[in-house]
Image (cartoon, one colour):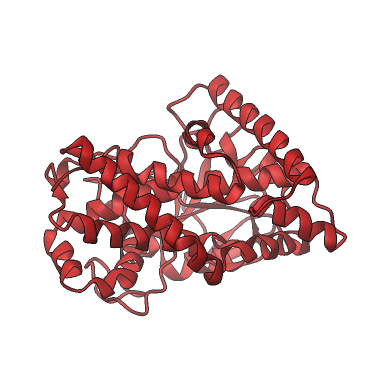
Length: 406
């Protein structure tokens, strides 16, 4: 069966009834329209998949690539550059095959559980300091601005060996490059150029004098293995880490607090049993209804998905958030269960391109939750949960602010 011509085209992303609620449309799509036609903000069309099995299939299938620069691939935005996903990063970093695997192997060495254990006390100290500063300022406070936003950028600067004094610039660059609507094309391009210039100088300095950071490690490892990484690839790695790790985690910290405080029995449960932090973080990741755009894939050959034949040249949008609410994959999928285990959610993708930084994201979320439970047991939302507002135009989805008191 192929698309019928009279089938309506959805406007994507699909609007939610409230910031923490999933669109009602997801249920209909999963049941009746597993491969739907959707129009992006750019006006280009994609095929949208929402079922757990189908999203996992597309993300794991080697025929679906990230070649979003193909002439017939859908553009995410109507700006010329197509935003951060269609720019130099994808041209410089190997997007598939052996090259990609080699790059991932080197990157993944930096995200081992062993390394996370070393980093954890530093993240904990930083989170503690940020919470103390928030308490000093008094309440109501915005948990996202006080803790969610500064923490991950500090961690990434730390990993890249960038001085703390440059953190604010990194925050700005990250925000500009990841926003589809808030900044003008000139601002986005300027941010990208400033970032590339900064990182190029940084890479040169690391080549001359390697330190205890991921770029130095990549330089030393790739030189030793005889496959010297060009400066451009190192700069792109820095950009990839910033873009992938800052905004997503910053927003997730805010959403995690929002979800756990929206029904305060969840918070009380964690206070009573802090050993549930690990499974609670996984459930927060699965339950997140406002996960942003989803993962885009491009197919260079015809493939069948859920009984629909997709022609070569199709751009597919995978909604991991919709897949994570699929009743056929998760029992009581629309219920938040802080003890859920196993929890094979797709928040970090699946297959060869699943997020290599997921151990870091998990560590940051667990640490933040532990620190908040310990330091601010009386934490609560300062507004009703249905008054929380989502950020418009951001690729990764998030709340504008998370007003709290204690």
